[in-house]
Length: 268
Ligand code: DGL
Image (cartoon, rainbow, N blue to C red):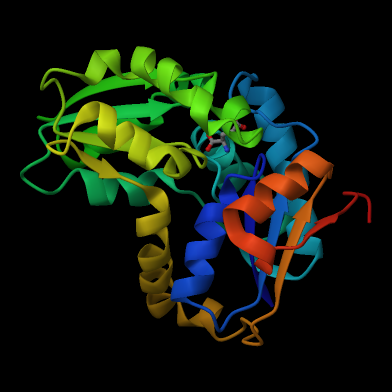
């Protein structure tokens, strides 16, 4: 069986790429809901419906566990999927998110006392990062900033135009207000350098593509009943619900020719 990775769009390919690098032996099936990205400005109910459909597609295509790389979907809909949908429909499958593992890396070290979170509107509104960080360390000060314009620019490969917008979004973190910044969105690792340049080297940036592979490795070591049913044939499938020339170009620019996108229909 495969490891499924879901994202609302193309950004989750970054985590997928680093998962494949760290744990290449497994089979991976990626699904990007490029037909309906971005999720960041949508309601919790809609995000839940979209996530449920995609998770079901991945289960029907032989995935034992699904990693919800999308922060927005993890923040707004993961709990409901785990508590309501899985037990009665797929009790033998697992769905994991990215928010708790990110907080587990960001919060425990003593350097991080003032943590900034940059994310979509829906993720910020859910308060998911704040809730999970405070569970680990209640004394942390947290500043959240939503950045609704970043994903469309990144998905359209307009990275040069991102800096003026970033300057505006990062203003609330500047002048020593934070020591650590969580990139709470699949797409932001692509603008890591722009962010570091604006905030300066003193701010530690937590990027999920660097931490999720290690977290998955630990999870699989602990859950041998899952690990042992995973197929180890190094087959990687990258599926999207809508495919345009711009998407193909963007993905080739990010990954070279390694990643070939296929268009799929959820009814298949
Ligand atoms: N994948 C989303 C996230 O990580 C960003 C794109 C969107 O808004 O759908 O929050």
